Length: 469
Image 1 (tube, one colour):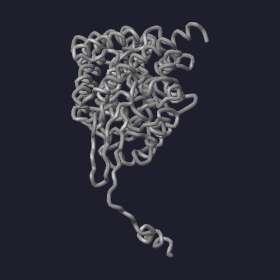
Image 2 (cartoon, one colour):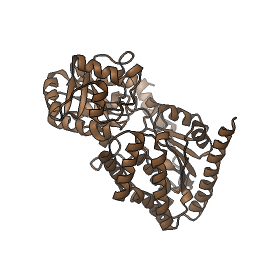
Image 3 (cartoon, one colour):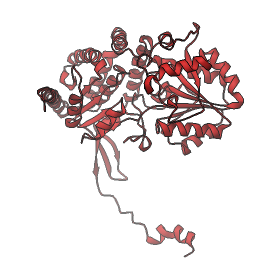
Image 4 (spheres, helix red, strand yellow):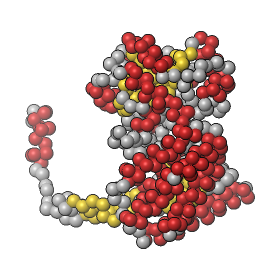
């Protein structure tokens, strides 16, 4: 091991030791009120409008991803929504008692959380994790992306100031300082009590193999179906709102749009009215070549403003253009447009009917994005239920702007989160939105109740009727 690697490990171990000491005191003298106020202190560090704007601006300047107004909105909505979800949540002491079953459930902290932070959301994601960790009695150490270290440091500084106002130990919330390295992130994953990984699938795999309990989330690559019964104008507006938000940094942004052939032309008109520009011929070829430079996504086009993207591809667009569409009839190898594009580009597929549209969506998921989510714009509720019963997905988002709805919204029941579990289909240990329940253990106190012993005859009666015995 080199001296640099050894120093990196010792640095992380020192951070962890401080976090461990702070967490032990926090838990030993914990109460629901204490946990609630500490969580709100961390949230207020971002909810303050001036700090939100400063952090959003800094995030875009350092990472080059997204845009400031939308990051301000994201930081505000995600944090406010999380507080709404947590307001009445019990996370300390006895949280449930069922005398009929003789069961009492007690919330217990996990300890020190290690959270790997993506460059796409270097403010909203760590704040979400910090608030959940403090609400449940834990300490947390963040490992930011290389481009996000500076804004993470600023965010944590504001959180420390708010914790001090409460009389809480700032060591409850820490981050791994620059320069970021795989050695530092790996050591944090190895020694913390729970790893939470949002971001690259490489980091997710490393988290699962670190020897520590780990929650990783799967790759996004959302496709949405627009069938012949959809309100086409409403669908187009919602897709535009979702696709253009923060320059498509969200894993829930529509990468593929699958439209039933009978309404294709009318839907394209509706999309055009919303600022979509359908590229054909040489323009489409130029965009593909620029976006998938050398077989990989061009970093100069990822999550960039549309004029900058157009300049890289040599395109001339009108001032009302908001995002771009390219056609595809192929899926998988040899068709990079199948995958996640993290840019203001969606791939347009045409389906013969709803059955064919579902098959296209399934084929896309088989290539990338299994387990994450699929969208549907339709007036037929049974079709949404069918997708939920037949597709390898944890979420079917119906008649909503996908990137807002998937991670929780004020008009649906999903928990506010920036990390979506994709279940076994996506190689994940969870199938729901990462939330406070994943940040705590629950101890069961089990007391005796009157016996309930079924007879063998009763248990097998239906079986014997079925087989004729």
